[in-house]
Amino acid sequence: MSTSIQISAPGKLMLLGEHAVVYNRPCLVSAVDQRMHVTLELTTRDKFELNAEDVNIKNYQKPLSEIGGGEIPKGASFAEMAVKNFCEKYQLKKGIKITTQSQFSSLFGFGSSSAVTVCVIKGLSELTKISLSEKEVFDLSYKTILDIQGKGSGFDLAAAIYGGTLYFVTGGKKMEPLDTKGLELVVGYSGVKADTVTMVNLVKEKMIAQKKVIEKIFDYIAQLVEDARDAILKKDWRYLGTLMDYNQNYLEELGVSTEKLNRMITAARKTGAYGAKLSGAGGGDCMIALVSKEKQKLVQEAIQNNGGQILELAIEAEGVRFEE
Ligand code: MEV
Image 1 (cartoon, rainbow, N blue to C red):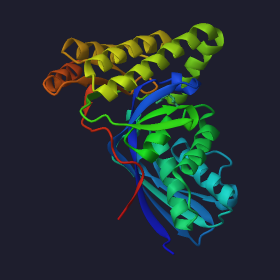
Image 2 (tube, rainbow, N blue to C red; image 1 turned 90 degrees about the vertical axis):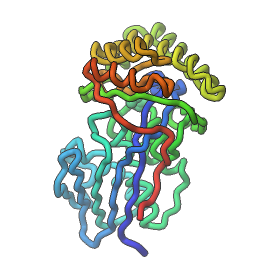
Image 3 (cartoon, helix red, strand yellow; image 1 turned 135 degrees about the vertical axis):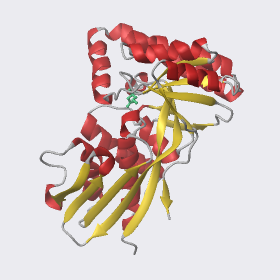
Image 4 (cartoon, protein in one colour; image 1 turned 180 degrees about the horizontal axis):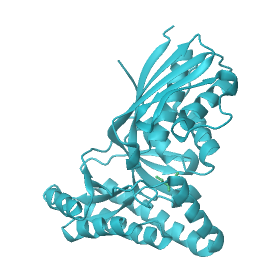
């Protein structure tokens, strides 16, 4: 039996439906071709060991009996809780050493925590020869996310596991692949790191204060996602862009966009993008613009001129996989 394994999972971009998807609505998400790489090793040492330099975790160690307890540094929490959940569920009592290395910065909001969680659970199942279906990997990963964050839809886990582009409903109630061939995106990073939990809580407070209004907004967003799915099937990029613009308006109503994101989005629209919106929790992170090949350069320049950093990447990437 092998005691060490290398595995990787992609980051993700939300296309439409963020926030509403936390409240039982659908979203569209695509995996991106920038990956989180994880090395997992079963050891004879009675401890959990972690190195994750991207998030400032160096030689972090804990006795197996204390795993998941006490103070856990933020950068270690997803790997540690994923190990805890796997070991508890499958009665694994072995030392585990994990090293993570990301091709993308954890600042971009591409879902590095979810990608790590998926790699740890899938990797441990391979090392221990406990065969898990993709849905079982999803369910245990989703439990891990909820244990740490309390709330979340799990859409980023689905992208990390299945790859491609998915029509996804909260908690994995639906996860259906969608062919987005021909869809061209420009991705701009706002330079501001957003905290997903803070943004989700901000919307939660609004939901408590103005439930009827926010539920209506989420219903409208859900309709946009349904229409966007049809537009993608028909490859009607112009209409998909319009739907993205509407989605952005609702996100602004929810108070999760920022002036910087708005400037980048407006600049993209003015230079000929079919549509543009923030992608993810808001409060910073990235925006996306849907473009034709001809307009791509112009839109990129306009975003840069408004303080955005262009991230060169492709969507529809492969899901979690073992590496040589
Ligand atoms: C964050 O990238 C997207 C949210 O919808 C949260 C989630 O779906 O878990 C805001």
